[in-house]
Length: 65
Image 1 (cartoon, one colour):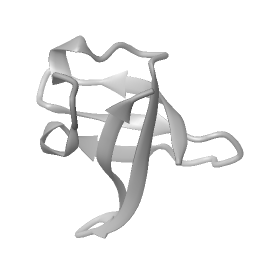
Image 2 (cartoon, helix red, strand yellow):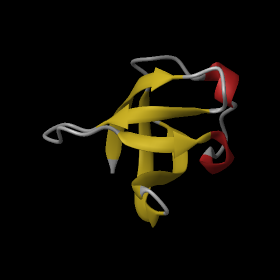
Image 3 (cartoon, one colour):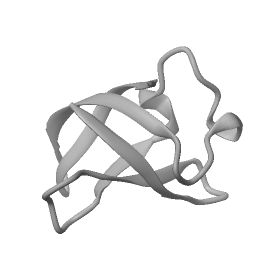
């Protein structure tokens, strides 16, 4: 899937917006591939997979597009 970084926090997680979806997907810095958390900026394009987490859907296997 493809999306855009909607926001990042200073606590190692953030949210990805997906076209056509109202709710942004949560992601944790542990799920990043080939990119450092501190290098992500709002508006960056990313690719990812979606998995069921303890609090609902979240993004996994995230790469900068």
